[in-house]
Length: 236
Image (cartoon, rainbow, N blue to C red; front, top):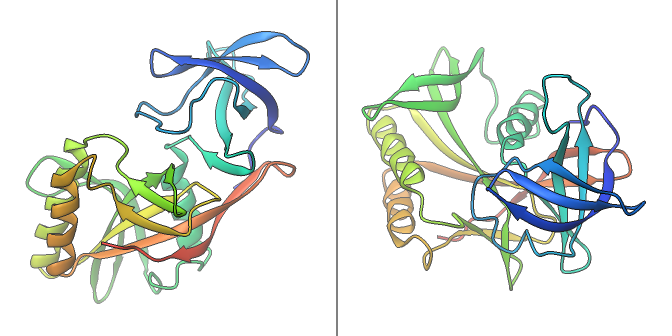
């Protein structure tokens, strides 16, 4: 996908109230921008970090600039906009990039399902049945080039794993898709020390046939683009 506007560089001053960040532009001006990530953003919000933002010129937007990427470890790029994950996965599926997911006749998003009042991110259907896909954005990278999920305890994520297990036991395909927005990651794993319940549920999900897939995004600041390209192993 390509952003509507060219990405602009700035330096992070601070992130606050979860959805706001103050940044210093290259000309020295300080502005407040929208932070599209309500999570903990571990390792992705250090003051002084180089960041990039996009701009949408809409009168209804109080903060027209949106934080998209941050540089970590002096060279690695991380996409902090968790809202892009579903769009990236959709684009990759429709473009034939995801080799495990092909030959579907109908695609829907945000469809109600399950026993706990959930909505599946992507639902694919064909003559052979249905494929339920839950998307998670991975931006938390640690030493060893490992991407971890989650970066904080996630009751919502635990619920989604339970729903996927129910779907699989009923005979449909169930997929947990890790969208890795981190150029320094080479493998993905559950963050057992952060959320041991999630890690255990993930192992149980695999045992009943839930598929776990991870693909990494290629990020190009100069062309203001990001797209899923490379499959990564998932270590559970």
